[in-house]
Amino acid sequence: MRTQHQLRQTELLLAAGIQRATRQLKASADYTGETWDLLLPMIPNIESAQVKIDLPPVAEDSSRKVRVTARLSVSANRAIQRSYSFSVDPN
Image 1 (cartoon, helix red, strand yellow):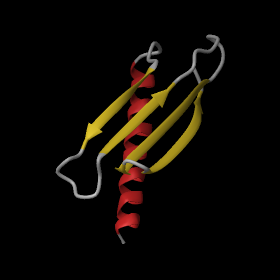
Image 2 (image 1 turned 60 degrees about the horizontal axis):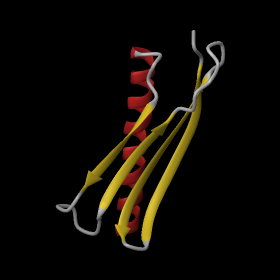
Image 3 (image 1 turned 45 degrees about the horizontal axis):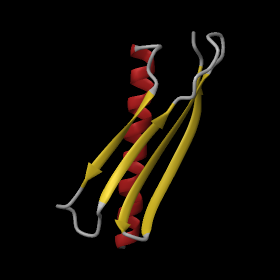
C-alpha cells in the first residue's frame, strides 16, 4: 500500500511538471526549463522529491521537445521515477 501511495505521489508531481512546462512555453518562447527540489521531511517514508523540466535548444521552425521527470526518493538507495516526453508546435 505504501508503494502504491508513493507511486501516485510521483505521478502527481509528474503531472504538475507537465502543466508547468506547457504554461511556461505558452507564456514565453525563451523558456528553457527548470528543476524543483522539494524537501519533504514532514511526510513519512519520503526523503525528497524532484521535478525536472528539460527543453533542449532547437531551431526556430522546429517543434520544441520537452521531457519532464519526477523522482521521489524514499530512502538512500530507493527511488521512484516517472518521465514523460512530448513535443510542442511553435505556432
